Image 1: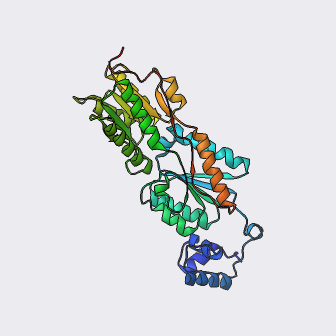
Image 2: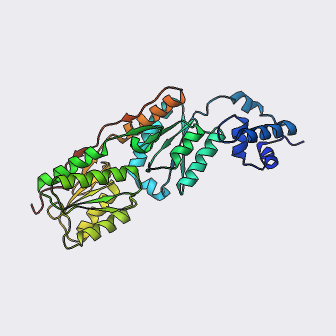
Image 3: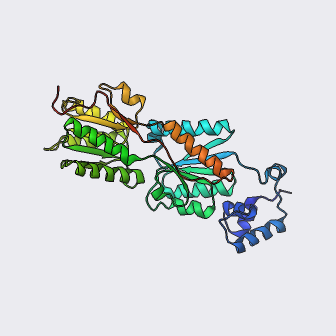
Length: 339
C-alpha cells in the first residue's frame, strides 16, 4: 500500500500542505483546533515521518532565506545586491550554512514564500531587504516567530533586528560638498519612493538644500534601472532652469546619466556634475570617473548574516549601525562653468 503523505492529510483536512507542516511540527501559524484536527487525521491514516525526517526532527535546516522583490534582470545588473550577497555568503559558508535566494513579483508572494519556507523547515531564518514604512512583511514574520534580520532603518523594522547605516549623514556631506563647489541647483534622481531608505534620503536631501539656502533643488523617483535614470536625466537637463549637479541613488543610473550628458553635448563636470550612490568598479571605469558615495557592502551583508546566525542560536541581538557611506571625489564633479 502507498505510504500516507502530508498531501493526503492536507486533502482530508481541507488545508494546505504548509498548514499541515506547521501543525505536525508544532509551529505557529495554525489555530489550536486545526492543529488537533490535523494531528488526529495523521494518526487515523497512519502517517509517520520517514526515518530521514525522524533523524532530522528538531535539527536545523542550516539554511538562510533571502527574497528580493525586483525583476531578475535588474537584480543581475545591480552591483549592490551582488556585493551584499557575497558578504552574506562569506559568513554563511564559513558556518556551513546555505543561502536560499528567490526573486518574487510582489510582497504578498514574498510573505507566502516565508510561510512556506518556515512551515516546511527549509530555513532557520531570513534576511529582509527593501524595507517600507508599515511594511506588511514585518508583522507577518513576527507572528510566525521566524528569526529575521532587516537590512534597513530601525524606524520601519518593528521588533526585528535591523542592520543599517546613516544615509542622512552621507546625503548631507554630498550636498555640502556640491554647495562648496558653487552649485546652487542640485537634483536627486532617487529610487523607489515607497522604500524607507529612499524617504530618509529624500528628507535629508531637502533639509540639507534648504539649510544651505539652495532653492533650485528637485527630486525625481525611478525604479533604479539605467533606462529610468537616463529618462530622468533628460527631463532634468532639458528644463529651462536645469540643475548643475545631479546625485543618483545607484551607480547604474549615474552611468546612464553620464551617457545622456554626452548625448546632449554637456561637458562633465563643467556643465553638469554627477555623483553616484554606492561606489563600484562601474563608477571608476567610465570617463570621467564618477564621484561616488562608497561603503563596504560585503561587510554590510556579512554583518546581517552574523546577526541572523546569532538570533538562530538563541542569542539576544540588538540593531547594528554600520559605517556611513563616504564621499570619494573624482572627475565627474567640479565647480559649475569651470573648464
